[in-house]
Amino acid sequence: MLEGEVIRVSGPVVHAGGMRGSRMYDVVRVGDGALTGEVIRLDQEVAVIQVYEDTTGLKTGEVVENTGEPLRVELGPGLLASIFDGVQRPLPLLVKKSGDFISRGITISALDHTRRWEFEPSVQVGAVVGPGDVLGTVREFNLDHRVMVPPDLHGTVEEVAEGALTVDDAAVRLDGDRPVRMSQAWPVRKGRPYGRKLDPTIPLLTGQRIFDTLFPIAKGGTAMIPGGFGTGKTVSEQTLARWADAHVVVYIGCGERGNEMTDVLTEFPELLDPRTGRPLLERTIMIANTSNMPVAAREASIYTGITMAEYYRDQGYDVALLADSTSRWGEALREVSGRLEEMPGEEGYPAYLAARLAAFYERAGRTACLGADKRTGSITVVGAVSPPGGDFSEPITQNTLRIVGTFWALDTNLAYRRHFPSVSWIKSYSLYLESLRDWFTTSVSSDWGRMRDRTMFLLQKEAELQEIVQLVGPDALPESEKAILEITRMVREDFLQQSAYSASDAYCPIVKQFMMLKAILSFYDAAVAAMGRGIPLRQVLALPQKNEIARMKEQLDADAIGDLIGAIEAAASTLEAER
Image (cartoon, rainbow, N blue to C red; front, side, top):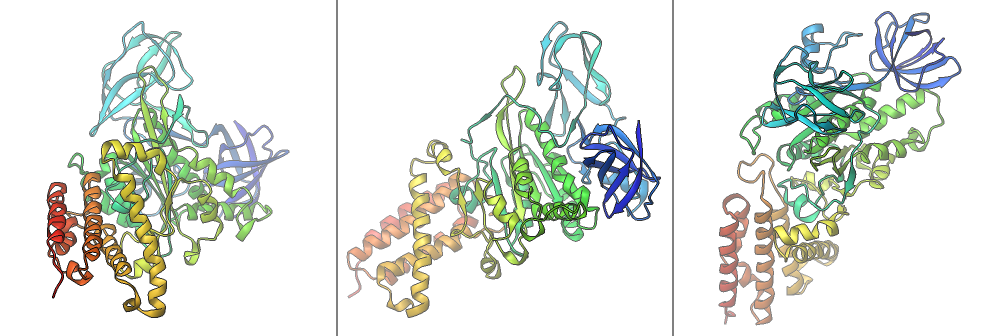
């Protein structure tokens, strides 16, 4: 094992001499406390190391040992319902071993190597297997955990195990006495291989009307949620974790406040999965790397999370990865870059910020998996961004904007008015609309695209009219424009507003979303037709069906809304002008 010694310490950055022969991103043990670190720069025999633990008390001359291996994560049965720190150490075990505060130098396996899992093989002796082929399954809560051939192995099956196995046991043995164990390890900075990427043609349904109807995201797509303090980023991500149409959720608390992360850790075990009725945590992997934890581990946490997401993608599952927030990750990059004395870019961030962000988001995607059984899986990445003062012109927001396909911009003014989700329909956009249009047309309605586009036109028209209203007042507007203001108010209050804490409205099926929008636009069409016959707008607004529209999201299902649409058209057609 290669050994050197500490020659300089600058916060989480350590310089070690005598390290000739080291490689980039080798994991090292630093000092008497065996602190975990990673080589991030090499200069002759000097290795620059970012340490994932507190370096307080570290002295020059202490020994540095190079393990010769990159930072890896353990992958196998037992990941679901687990809570890790940024370098995949299980926090519940850390508490038992070191108390409320994590002691330095502790290394704990991510997986339980003593627990036995019931392995059901799906291959026979003599079968020829290659990278990604499924050898059998293990039941992990409500998910069939598929034990696969690692990407670098292939051969003929000579022996098959069955029954209760640990993650270290060989599920099968290939020719040449090569065991394929239940678990495997993978370096976090290297994306796992796949067959090919597929077009983003299937939406990730979230049950949130403003996301699914106005700004949808595809399975395998990327999205960002930027917003200032108090605009609801964390609640939005937790809502997506609960309701998104994904088999597995990876939630990364990257540099968030400790009390926020505590709320997440206490609430998730109590939340019920709407699919199974079981605790939501049973299909969730959580990474808690709070703002008071070492800054270098924060930088590694998103790579740890996305590598575990890729593992479940390769099994043929849809994974939602929620990073809260990438701004804190960028700040970790900036601090380490400053310690390295690199030339700063905009606002002190390193010049390679955009490249690092792109490398992370590009690991998302819907893919044809390796293996002979034609599986498809996806990773959808949603990153929250916390721009200082809500300034969307800062580097993290701008560089992320160039990469992601969906932009859900949170608006401080909407949040102050208690309009949640506080997503601005003027600033937000989705680049997946055209690729998803066929799915919505086939699975929801042939009118979906037209109604969505029409709604957006009316909301943009309202923004223009509001400027006029502020100058001359609403009474100066003609009846037709007053109708637009009234109908867009209904869209905002009766459609876009949605409570994450409502038992009946936290999740809205996509068909009901379409019918709700159709009901509001039908009321608008009926109002325009009535005004064309000389009936004043106030008389149309007095129709009792208007109150029924306000009750839709809480009390009516899709069929009842269909009946309401018929009642709106009938009532409006019988209106007569007051004499």
